[in-house]
Length: 281
Ligand code: NAP
Image: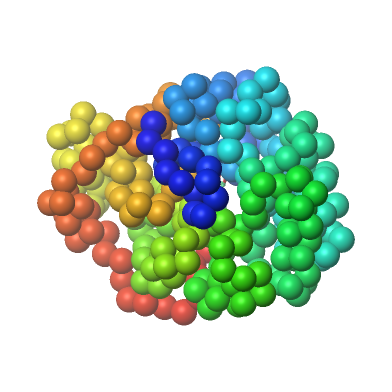
């Protein structure tokens, strides 16, 4: 598994990690097994949120990592409606209890909401000083919202921005990725397989993915991941509740695409025109 420094934190994090959204609907034993096999294969980044299954997924993740906390780069998120100065601290403490741990490696604001960002950031800084989180980040922020956050927090404080990024949705390449690169903010690609909307093998793009996959003895899903993490500041967090999917995702980190393969994927799934804001799921 390849690791990279996660933004300006000094943590080495796997370039492919593990998402957990909707895992409460999956077979529980298989999902826990998938997370553990993923850890065995070096995918130390596990992403969850208080929102997922109303806390049920955090409990599931807690069970999966109970005897392995030290191996994990554990991330959870506060819902915007809870992200007041006091509410953020309380939400974090509830999440820590469900996960049966006493710190997060990184804690995120799930998306911009009605509470003043200044208050949320003050709470995140307080949590960091208390040792309950090692770093904090944001999610679903566009480049202007990130610039506001930097004005409030100062440079070097925001570890990551977690955003929608997959072959059919490349809008963040226009401005969000360059902004994050410039400011040392890790970009974490969520829903890297389009959350169930993966290119059909019968589509023109799907056929190109299949050809490149064949040349690497890989699957189109693995080729998609290899493409998405080609920028040195990018991480992807596919969700897999089947252990064999988790192992495939981990193996994708080893695939080196040639310049010609990257060009063919780029042409098959064009990034499209620049739009305002950041796309969300
Ligand atoms: P996704 O990762 O794009 O797709 C998940 C689907 O792909 C599942 O059906 C999964 O099947 C399947 N899959 C996984 N690995 C596969 C493989 N190697 N081959 C074939 N199929 C495979 O969807 P997502 O859950 O929307 O996104 C990933 C994570 O990003 C989330 O779980 C969550 O942690 C995070 N996220 C964050 C936000 C945010 O607002 N910050 C929003 C959405 C998602 P099985 O599960 O059956 O194995």
